[in-house]
Length: 162
Image (cartoon, rainbow, N blue to C red):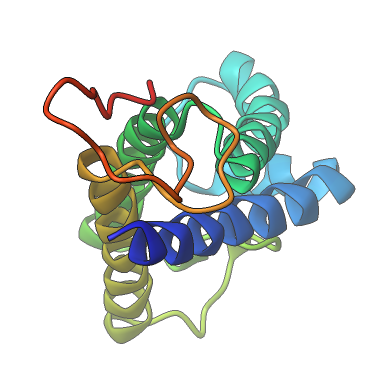
């Protein structure tokens, strides 16, 4: 289990770090991406466009080092649910936008229902990693208390790692 959790932790960390880094590197494009969803009042577009990459990078770093894994996994799951809801909303309203999940964003007339379905399925896969880590946060090479591999748990041990 700890090896599977390590792979899930590192995989989800990579997703957040890459996604956050790309968005942080081009804040103007991030604003365009957030605005394209047409969900937020204009006064919140810029704060969300700036805050989202910071949150993604923070979650990625926590998962990478294995600190607060369960909490980072739960926050990841919540964020992924919000992102999935945003994509579903754009699709349902007939918008044709690049999701901006890994940079880019804005109007994209090449986007189809299949494009949205693929993005949702991809994010459900990431959500599965987050749920796994929320249930099984202990993994190898983690800094968090109760997360390190290498010893057999006893009946009195708690595997919280929150």
